[in-house]
Image 1 (cartoon, rainbow, N blue to C red):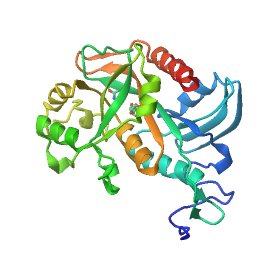
Image 2 (cartoon, helix red, strand yellow):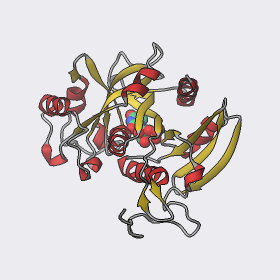
Image 3 (cartoon, rainbow, N blue to C red):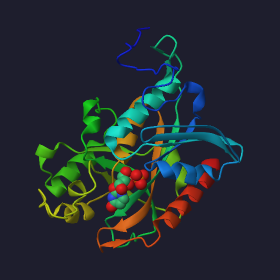
Image 4 (cartoon, protein in one colour):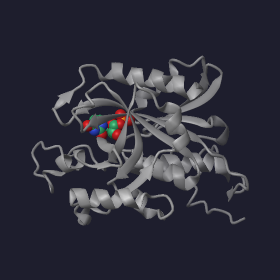
Length: 290
Ligand code: R1P
Ligand code: URA
């Protein structure tokens, strides 16, 4: 088995992985991703016990027991570039032997659920709704560094590019599905299901105008009328497609859930986003146990 070079898999002097500051024993097989570091404690406050806690940069991790199940909660910070770091380092923690820096013969598959926030594109999905992403369309390009042929949904990709008349100078969007078993496990009349657009920014990349004109001022109107086999393009956020893509490529299972805090169609923002995020947290913990 070929040894991975020290420059490629960087370990800290204490043996932990470079950015996440974690050792293999610090993480559970069930992992919750959040963007915001402060959201980690909003989840682990419901745990019976916390066995491990660390933070480096925006990556805060806590592992503990919730009703008998060992769960790790980790903050990814904002954006697909951070997801590249988090997914690769989590995979290394379970699938690479840190002593020999070789890939283990038997690979481990993690269950990853994102508990995020997002902006709805549909009037029928108002602020304070919960939403899960059956598919994610990545407009961010991060994942394009990897070989995507075997995991991308090219029919949705083509339909989306045609429907939006996508400007290819921004890169070609890619489409990845949620893990089907996790999707089924979380289906409920409490949560909308749709196609999520993952953007590489919060303002221009999501069609927000403060002072700068946009490359395509009508893009959000074209996105919100996009549907594929009855499933609508429902919301904009900044991590889901990257999570789905890297999880699939590395053999992990992933599902993204979002508290809808903004509605871009009618211009509203939640009066109490933390209440909606807490509702999503409780729903998620309940379903992880199911
Ligand atoms: C932008 O405000 C951030 O909020 C959303 C977006 O994806 C982006 O990360 O998710 P989180 O609340 O999980 O960070
Ligand atoms: N997060 C986003 O990325 N966009 C929104 O509109 C709201 C939350």
